Image (cartoon, rainbow over all chains, first blue to last red):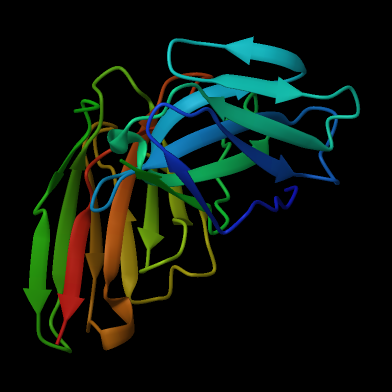
Length: 112
Length: 112
């Protein structure tokens, strides 16, 4: 499975847009890019998933360039409650045994 | 609340004791995963079930670990002769055919 690299931590302020970039140079043709969010003492929660170009849902956008070697999670107008660890993962979601391979994630701190 | 429940939420035990955790997945999900997470790290895959069949086990799952999903519904993870290094959060996730994984709140194990 492709390895991902993302910043260890990021700081932001309430109301700002936060962009977290993930590098996945060895992404395979069948791999999708997925982001999860985790609060302390809780299990990870799915945020967004994409294969190419741009995906947007009610909480985030995911930008994927044509070469797919990186991706950027964009959180618009963050609030204090967005303080969490964000994980970028790649893998073939159509694989029936698809298991998630987590890195260390990016710790986002949102300040008032 | 994702619909995946785990019991107990916290377990403190003495080294050498056996412990068993339970996971109740979302009822229509036929895929079930166990992960382990230590402080400051992302979750690590332990094992995967499709219905009642255990199809994949990580090398992290030593002989002291056993997991079952007898009727393809709930699952148990047992650790025999616990060691201090087993202290971690144990996470269960379930997944429908092809979609994101839904995580439970986890069971935090402390081995004294």
